[in-house]
Length: 176
Image 1 (spheres, rainbow, N blue to C red):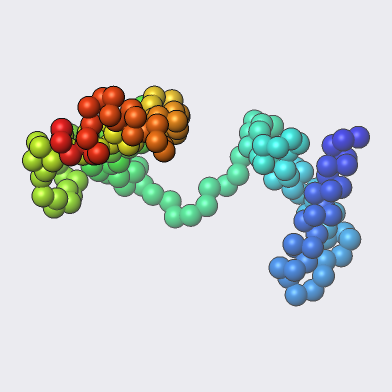
Image 2: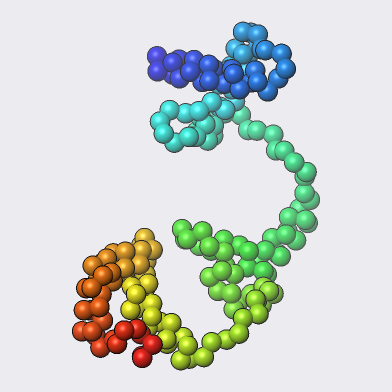
């Protein structure tokens, strides 16, 4: 019963969208035909809050879709793969979603490196001291929050000044 209700709601929801896309309104038979085609192909939204179609939820239960777009030869695909490997455009292992050239840019010299003037050791130490003083250091690797977000009492208001004085900071981290 739930499935029939879901199909009815999907058909009612899709009917105005389909009607607005075309100049002439669809007949009842056309809407039903489109609904049954969507059911057969699995292009109807599945139950729950996943926002996935039935085909996406269970791809083996539906016929394979025809590939769209221009076809590439095996040689073209192999050439593109080779270029992606050389340039580091391949996705790195794990769940980070980062590319290899983002994780280890030194391994991929073909990447165009922006012309940035290098900082001196003292400038880098100064920036690190400022970041530590203001709590702008990542607290842990899990969620990416900074120390000032995890421990707001230590880095805001008068308490921050007390902490700074206790640690020997004099107004700013510039003296380090």
